[in-house]
Image 1 (cartoon, rainbow, N blue to C red):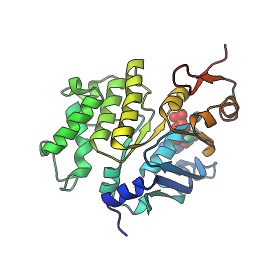
Image 2 (cartoon, rainbow, N blue to C red):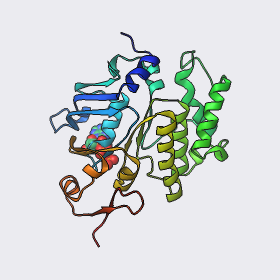
Image 3 (cartoon, helix red, strand yellow):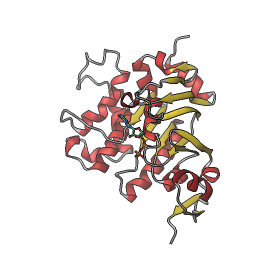
Length: 283
Ligand SMILES: Nc1ncnc2c1ncn2[C@@H]1O[C@H](COP(=O)(O)OP(=O)(O)OP(=O)(O)O)[C@@H](O)[C@H]1O
């Protein structure tokens, strides 16, 4: 059965947004036989959840996110959106369902913030992607872009060139572009990396608002275990391309599992207001 936006919505509302089934992946430069970047990994992304992916440097977090986004193809195994393999889904439909915010964004041409956010509307256009230009937007496109910019606090930057922004400002613009896409699944690679504490708090609040109001499913890669603990319903811990643990923050963020994954001792206590695990370095 061909996949449509309606069937994606039905599949997602029925419990599982995405599923990875025994996927293995290695980069082309590694074909000579080094170990897998992702090895025989199976997981489910539940509809409407915020799933965090944590793990040491080089454990495969970004690679897994790119595999879920369809930007990389597994050498073995399958990734499904709803019930359909993402290999078989039309790229424009895939882009209407899944939005990705990569860790680093390189823009070759000097577009303004407003133009960049409006690019999030491309997958919704009837014309071919190459046949349309900026300036052809509908009222709905403009409203969605405006709302996404308001939600990420970048309206004041609308006329600035993206290339002239700070890392944190650029990060918020890329999230605005992803929201303008109106996806059902949002994949974020280190969304807090360049944000100051005020914008980190706002980003956490935005993610939980999007989950509540738009029933958005979010997968986020984070180095910050406290962000993962506060912002996520479940946390997946990766080590050398394999899942070591997956479950609620209480189940996963423990001194034992952190020692097993990161090889160091840390202090884990309860956050004074949320009660969720809080990780600090030993004194
Ligand atoms: N384009 C690439 N070509 C070849 N190898 C790559 C490429 N990108 C990543 N790798 C390698 O794949 C492994 C996993 O990298 P990945 O970026 O997925 O890890 P990560 O957990 O996100 O790391 P970090 O926490 O440092 O961002 C690393 O050994 C990395 O060197």
